[in-house]
Image (cartoon, rainbow, N blue to C red):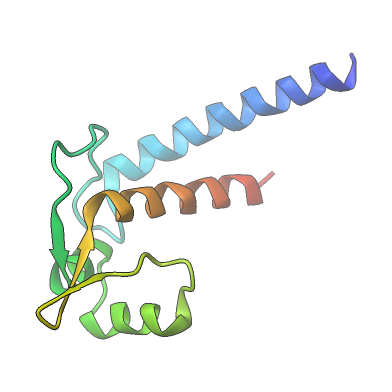
Length: 107
């Protein structure tokens, strides 16, 4: 077996593993929250801090801490009239990148 064949086989295994992880996450949601939808939203909703906190099963203060550096890659909100709003599509992309990172980190 050549190194190209081994690489292709490894990629196929990672794809299968990622699909299994996404199925599990879609079934349980985040921290016991509502399940993730497989279908992308038809519109890019703006979520308030309370909605984001509920999505991840944390307090509003935790979301503020994530912004101040605890999670450096957490999506930045839009500020409208002094209030923070997150784009749902950006949060979904961040969720998926976290899943990919965790799958790549396991062997």
